[in-house]
Each structure stands twice: as structure tokens, then as C-alpha cells.
Length: 324
Image 1 (cartoon, rainbow, N blue to C red):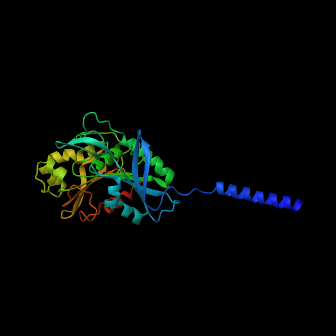
Image 2 (spheres, rainbow, N blue to C red):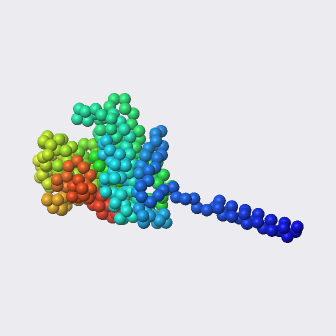
Image 3 (cartoon, one colour):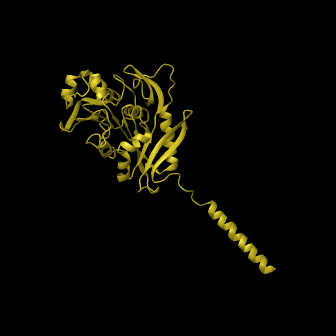
């Protein structure tokens, strides 16, 4: 009996020990390699965002993050598929994030429709009367927290890039969330910040405005027929269309305190031309880059809809910057 009792106690002890070990084991990850769809609640509504987790992600190294904001009447999943960023994320071993905007009633160019649209700084869209906009900056902050809980994120290397309405929202983040993001890119010829605007960003961060010389939004804005092109090269472009200067670089110059008359140009007019501005602070990372792409219409170029792969170009620029 004594031997039996000792064996029973030993068995119970081993069982309890095993249960304790099981209870303290690391829980399985809340994500999978590849495509992930997550939801969260922000400003009282459920929101969705997609994350591409590259095969090289181990969860042990702080990893950069790029947010890609889609355009009007598009979605995060669509830009997951077509933007080229998930491929860059895979090759560069970074997390790429594709949120979806909410759907609103909008009137643009005399047409009223219900489409997805980002809530950007005033002037980004003409929403229908009585439309109540949700706060997309709250959505961004909620995603920061959610990503930080799920992944090992490098908090000094978070970037935003957006196309069209998403480009306006990326510029909004550059103003309102510049203490959290390292650099921001806005794409689309219609401009990204409201004309004649002057905002006070939290931090003077690196920014970029990227557009094509055949962008329909821009072409219509200057009174040209669809299919026309504006000149390649900023001196001639803004001499011919001074209105564009007030819409495109001037709000960035005003808001991010740039040296207006002192910039350098480079590139090839047969492909893309670049203007590089320095900030008044003199800091090496206080810069603004403007890029005009030949033959690009109102699209985010991915190598299929246009020879340029914007995600590759933008990541090469992003990765030189980090938060101080």
C-alpha cells in the first residue's frame, strides 16, 4: 500500500508539473505567413486592414512597416493585390499593410455616388450634405496599437504611401501623425494637401509628391482634353500652368517649411524627372521630393499598368529615413 501511495503521488506530481508547463507555454501567433485580414473597432465602427507577412519574418527582429492607402472606390484588398507592395514586402522582409477606407456619399465633377473615400484634411472631397465622417486618424492609431500587439514592429521605421484619395490621407498623416511615421509619399496629380493651405505638422518629416504627366485629374484641372499631357520638367510645367504650382508643391513648401527657390533637379524627361527641396531647418532628413513620371495616367504604377514599379521606387527612398 505504501508503495502504491508513493507511485500515485509521483504520478499526480508529474501530471501537475506537465499542466503548469502547458499553461505557461507561448500561445500560437495570431497571424500566418502571407495574406492576413484583421478587423478592429475605431471611432465606433468596425474597420478592416490586410497585412502581408513575408516568409522571412521571424518575430524576433524589429521590422519596418509600410501602410499603403488605396484610392477612391477601391479597397485595401484590391491594393494588396495590385500595388506591388506585397512583393516588395516579401523581397525586403518588411510588413506591408493595406487598410480599407469607409464608404460615403460623394459628389465630384457633378456626379453623386457612394464610394470608399479617406477622411483627409479639408478640401480632399465633396461629401454629400449630412454625411458624418469617421476619424481615419483614430483608425490609424488603432492599427498602430493592433500591429504592435501582433508583430515585432520597428517603431522608428513606419511609413505611409497613398494613391489619389489615399495620397491625400498619406499627406494628412504626414501632418497629424509625423511623430509616429518616418516618411510619407503622396501619389496623384491632383495634389495632396488643400490649395493655399498652411498646416503645422507635429514634426518636419521627409515627404514626397509623385504624379504622372498624363494624370486625368490634373489634365482636367488645367483644362486640357483627356489623353493630353503636360510638359515634363517642373520649370516649363509651372510656367505653362501656374495654377498647378499652387496645387502641387506650394502647400508642401508652406506646411513643411521648405526652401522654395532652392532646389535641385535630376532625371530623364523620357522617363521621370525629380526636384529635391531642402528644409529651412538644415537637417539632412528635412526634405521634399517631387517626381513627375512620363506617360503615367491616374494610376499607381506597378510595372503592368505602366513600366515603373512605384513600390520599388518608394521603398528605395523610404529606407534611408527613420524617426530620430
